[in-house]
Length: 79
Image (tube, rainbow, N blue to C red; front, side):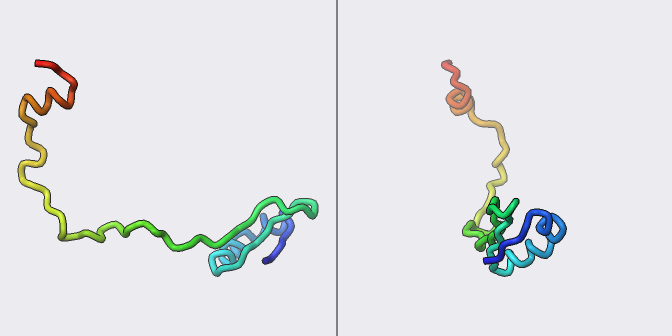
């Protein structure tokens, strides 16, 4: 773990962010007291956009008007 003073962090933020991205934990101190940390982010655990490409199909009538009874049910109408 690396500790840097706030003024040094302000002047070298880009370098410190690169070091954090490389796996280091950087503590930022103000008047000798730890105030914040720059830490590396883990890899995203979410699915990648486009991961299901070619597996889903959208029907031709996807945006066709709904039947009256179904539209009434969505709108809360009682006919």
